[in-house]
Image: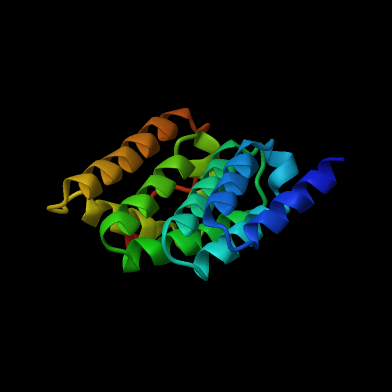
Length: 172
């Protein structure tokens, strides 16, 4: 029964109606992490091939998954880190705010921060967030500060040994 429901949600992601797509993403984000793990890589891949509001929703869903999954697969964390770092480097305006919001959602838990910090794209995400904190655009600055604030709050909750030590060479 659950598999059929997920298949229907996947079909909605492929349809031409943006409202149905966004509703499907919202429903997917409500699934327990163990039920969504097979869909998350597809959401990230799909987000990289689109522009507009839908990719932001897809990345936000994937970020929430990573933040709340008990032990997310490293491959998903790496894929999300890579996608976020690319978006943070290339985006402007509202797309940048959306990418920063996805980063903020991802690092909103010690598990999400720990998983992301193990990835190659993490240093680029941190650097882009720091640059965005100095942006003249207020929405961009606020989104960057939210990501930084969430990361600091999560850092307090990480048990020793879960996150790698800081490394000045790569920006961590």
